[in-house]
Length: 99
Image (cartoon, rainbow, N blue to C red):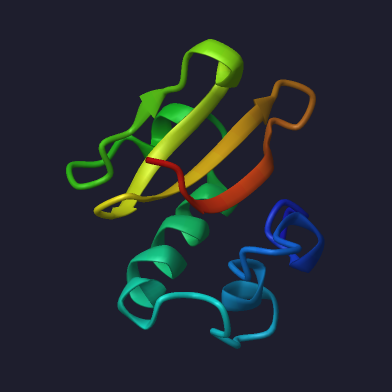
C-alpha cells in the first residue's frame, strides 16, 4: 500500500474502511464494489490520467479545487484527489457527494 488510502485519509467519509479494514460502514452499499475498484486503481496509479477509464468521467476540477481530480462513483458521488510529483502519489483522497 502506498499510504494514500487509509483511515487517516477518510476521517468522515468512511472510504478508508473499504480498503483499510475491509469494513463498509458509512459507505453506501451500492457503491462498495465500484469504490473499491477505483481506490485499487488509484493506489497503483503513477499518473492521475490512469483514472481516465470509460465509466469514471475523470476530469480536472476547477475554481477553488484547481489541481484536484474527480472520478465518478455513482450519480452525485465522486472520489476526488490531488496529486504529488514527489511520489508520484494521490493525496487528499475523498469520497464525497459534491453536487
